[in-house]
Length: 156
Ligand code: ZN
Image (tube, rainbow, N blue to C red; front, side, top):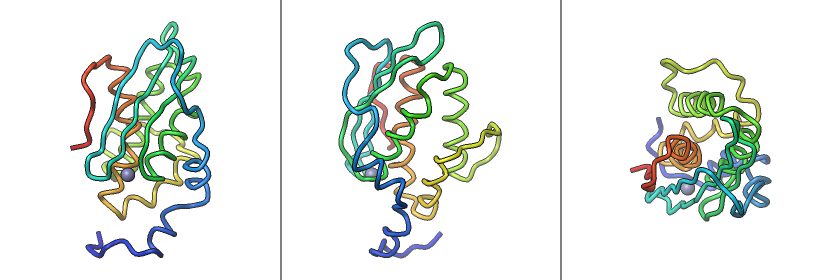
């Protein structure tokens, strides 16, 4: 892992087109009128904050949204996460959480074998340890919401 500060070029490499697109126009942004699970997440290191809303029926996530503010990576990650988990069963959503976390932290022990598809766009954050927390924040919020924790999650 390089110890150098992020330069403009590094950021440019990191922010692929897909990430910028999701950050500029986050999908599923706003609050759900009716939710069964919610969780808040904060990443104090970067200032990212989000609140996640899930509507779960018979163990299936039939609706999901988020609101919050933060850097492009945290917003893009939350946007992509909500796109992917809508319609999944909660065990399947958890498998995605495990796979994304394993992929981004490069700790593949016990990682489910899932094709992450467009989520691979976030792979660039691996080289920037502080950014990994931006990319995993929404996923930690998902995990927390599914566990029914009421206290906010923090990446710290
Ligand atoms: Zn961030």
